[in-house]
Image (cartoon, rainbow, N blue to C red; front, side, top):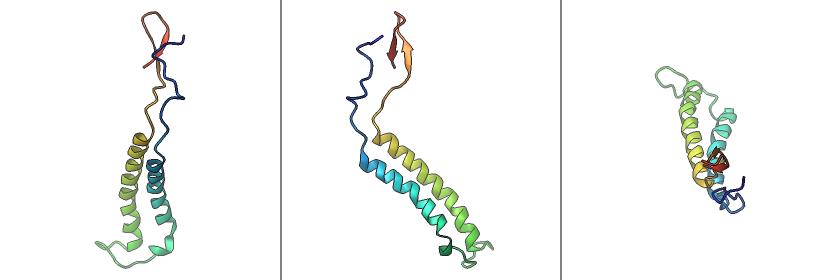
Length: 97
């Protein structure tokens, strides 16, 4: 079943550790910001009648989404493509796609 088109995972270049570290930082920022409750456990400044505590957390919904998506894109860029799916060629042998 071995074929010349099969991927040798030992020869794929290593992941870019700098980009992976940046992705980790992007994922850690919302966790740290929201766990540090004393920084936003207050009423003022109000925004449209909403206390700071409420609108600050709601703002993080969007910030966290943006940071998570950015981290996802960084991980995709940092890790080399490794096809894992197999398909049968004309002879019935499995080959990497």
